[in-house]
Image (cartoon, rainbow, N blue to C red; front, side, top):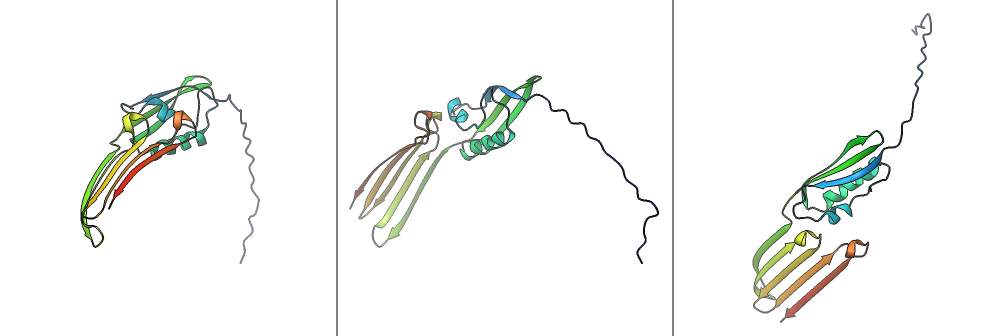
Length: 168
């Protein structure tokens, strides 16, 4: 059995939306970067001073800073300073960017082998990578030095230099 309501009830909702002024970024302040230089952080930001604030670009900036793997925590906080302006506070907490590993083994080609690898992912706070790797075996020795600058002179051009030597 289907029961029909005796009376049909309706309501009307009227929304008045008033668009405010666009919020602009007045200044960007960076805090917590004791080692990493400001320009290394700023080149990863997808928002600029005097531009209209863009939440998608702010999220992308957050992701890019995290992807550097130089920081334990990253926060991008807008702080209203005028009715139509905000300052962005970029707070980071740095972490160790170096790694050292050592190992050894045995193979039929090299016999006894000793391997060492030292890597620094943020050389002197510049965002450059330096890696020194060596393998010393009874029959063969390898050495490799790598230097990578992901943003040569803060441009979109990257540079990588690999120097290696093999002795058999």
